[in-house]
Amino acid sequence: MEILVCAKRVPDTSDNEIALNGAGDDIERDDLVYSVNEADNYAVEEALEIVERSGGTVTVVTVGGEEDEEILRRQMAMGARQAVLLSDEAFSGSDGRGIAAILAAFVRKGNYELILTGVQADDGAAQVGGMLAALLDYPFASLVTSIEVLDRGRLKISREIEGGNQEINEMDLPCVLSIQTGINEPRYVGMRGIRQVASVPIPTLGRAELGADGFVGDAAARVKRLDYFVPEAGTGAQMLNGSQEESIGKLIDLLKTNGGLP
Amino acid sequence: MARIFAYIPHRAGLADDCAAELAAAACKIDDAPATAVVTGWGPELDTVSESLRPWFAAVWKIAHEALAYPNAELVRQALVAVLPPAPIILVPHAHFGTDLSPGLSVKLNAAYVSDVTDVEPAGGAALKLVRQEFGGQVSTHVRCDISGGAVINIRPGAFKPAPAAATIGPVVDQSAKAGALKAGRRYLETVAAAKGDVDITKYPVLVSIGRGIQEPDNVALAQELADAVGGAVSCSRPVVDAKWMDKSRQVGSSGQTVKPKVYIACGISGSFQHLAGIKGNPFIVAINKNPKAPIFRVANVGIVADILEFLPALTHSIRQR
Image (tube, rainbow over all chains, first blue to last red):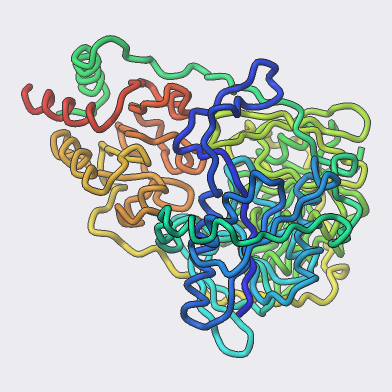
């Protein structure tokens, strides 16, 4: 099966405190560590495991700039056969609908049976996968937690619904699935693996090669971020400061008062 | 202003808890009351339609055998067939909204904004919406052009539910407009969550661990504290994703709903999906080394500390009492 995985490079929130910049129009990005979006990494692993079981190839694609090549190389080091960067001045400022249109134009140039995205980017809206499917008129399912390849161009998938329950669906191929974190155990990528793909060329396609519809770019975006701000704390927690010993003493008293200690 | 609709999911004849919250969100966009839209089949659909009347100007009912189970692909086709041009439609941002709304916006040629926590008119054909990014660490204002309509997913719990009105709207049967419904995705069955070795919903005290526990071996630090206070260990999603604890221990919208007396959140950032699983207004203690972690906004007591150092010290002090 030819599988395409759409991935995004994002600030790694597990390693970073996110703070506002002075102007309040962006987060402070200078000291941030970037990596591949966590759910997208699970999507790549899932694609690799499907190919190991049933044959085929995995291609990884992202929309962005040169700085995004690092995550494409990382996914190639994991085992993706090829990676493609979709990059053009005309793409910048696109909203989710615009990004989906760029990806749809790329999908139409290939022969992919299965397209995977992560369920949501840390700085995203869980939107591009569903939009891409609708643009291509492919079936879509979100929050996917397992994939089984059936015969005759079908998949059996489960998706996460409320209370830990799973909803089982059958999907016709080609289709688009958004992958939930925890679906598998992504393989480790060592420095050696990264070095091996360091000089593999990454094709870059722009507007001229792709086409894409009228919703692409800043002027066409109907959804625009105006600013960043820190939400109000509400009443907020009573913070226990002071030494660890003092904090523990106060906490034990509070636990007793509130039924946390016999 | 475009006409405002609210898509209301339901199950077993009961409307989603968010119905009155969506009615409230619609009122913040436009003073005219919104129209509810429900899809389904059989007597349950009629029960739900009736129950929504006090909150909406009208309830549009789309009955179709293929909609007996809410398959988002089929619901989308029905909505596209029934809604007028350039509508504003509000949808609860949960697993069904994630399935439905992005594709619905494409097929309606409307803008899409997900997981909205507040909304205000922005003059002309635009709305100013509030969303969160990076797990709730920062919020953003978003401008949305609604000249071609908009699909807006509303975060459950973000809006104060609207009161029921004295006048109740009519139920309007729109089923005939839905047309033929067919999709390349077919619902097969629902598999209930597996029961675990420990039922975290039964304990008065939960020591709950998140990404901050860092390694599977450190889970023992939480277990020792739980043993000392007569509680159980629960966790947030990243701990289950990493396979360090069983899914049955997960608190949140996709895990268990718990109602303890005391909830000790250790190394948990506090995403809204996690907080959605904590009910009954427990006394929440948050221990996290990131002073900006959103959990401190909802906790009763907060301590900025590394849980790997703090938990053993706390357990030791409790045992020494």
